[in-house]
Amino acid sequence: YSTPARRAVMRVLSQARPQGNAMNIKIDALNYYGATKKYHLHFPALREDIEADVVIIGGGAAGLTAAIYCGRARLKTLVIEKALVGGLATYTNEIENYPGFPEGSTGLGLMELFHKQAKKFGVKFKLTDVRAVQLKGDKKVVETFRTDYECRSVIIASGGKPRLTGAPVQI
Image (cartoon, rainbow, N blue to C red; front, side):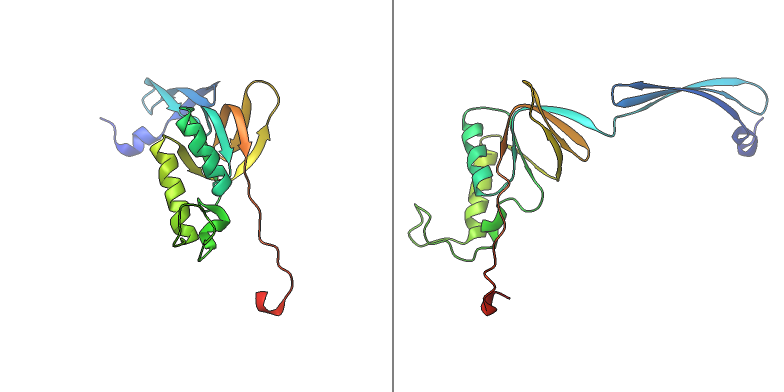
């Protein structure tokens, strides 16, 4: 009979074969007694490719508006946002000039409504950074750390950042 220590003394001959982004490994293991056992291991891809009709880079007011229109048109839509869905508007305490809200709204409250409406139309959201974009050809590719998103169209709604005037009250 073999003990765990004897089973651990093995010589492993392996053959690795990439299959797409995944890896298949076949191992012939020789144990202490010279018997051979075959193993087949499959490691799924660390990166994956996903298809969409439209990928929107940026989840602020403009990106969410575009997502609502794409979702209503029944396009498979993905919004990629690196930080907080809603963008800069989420940091605004009062929004008084948005049509349909005579009492005003908070930026966070308004952006939550945008987000909810986009999800209602089947829009998917991913919180991650975009590493690169390939816009040539019929298939566009938006690359993130773990995933490549192939699509027919890319909408860049990356937003902006507030500009400070240098006035003492802004510092």
